[in-house]
Length: 111
Length: 138
Figure (tube, rainbow over the protein chains, first blue to last red):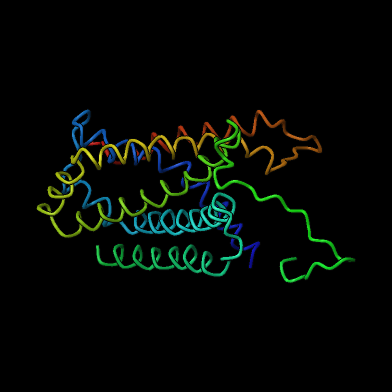
């Protein structure tokens, strides 16, 4: 199990590093602060309706969430020294990633 | 691991000094490590944020406008600003580590780490431009 989780963590680390900074910059404050005009609804609508976009976004979401789960698990262990709560922490982290992935599937399915 | 072992005359108590919960504040390198680890929270936040945006877009123009209005909330902008710094820090540290994680050989020669890191950064630039182009072309 651990190698698989590590693989997901690692793949998630790559996609998050490649794609999240630009998305965070644009939607996080470049559009809200008016530095750049936000894209029109039609444009975004057409973009997210494309099956390829949805597939890529689903991959980015799922892998990024498993990246979070794996890394945050060890952050909790090391940062707070709660190794003895191992099972609870694992449930919280990986369970959260599974739940988030299900949410992503629902949102992208219902576009 | 050893908690259950009773200490007797011939089985002394294990010496395991308790580490402070704030051990990561003691050194710059420890602090940098914990910040890097906490960047995962920003990663999870932006996944949620992106899904909220896509949901709003798929519910119609009104909902998209409402999302944009919500994203202008100063608290959200500050949160996104901090999150942005963290995901950039994640990206930089991730690509810096890449040469150590992947050893590539070409014609029996090991490709130098600098080249691997450089190709990762180049890929980052390409991905950034591609996303920006997809979103901003009119």
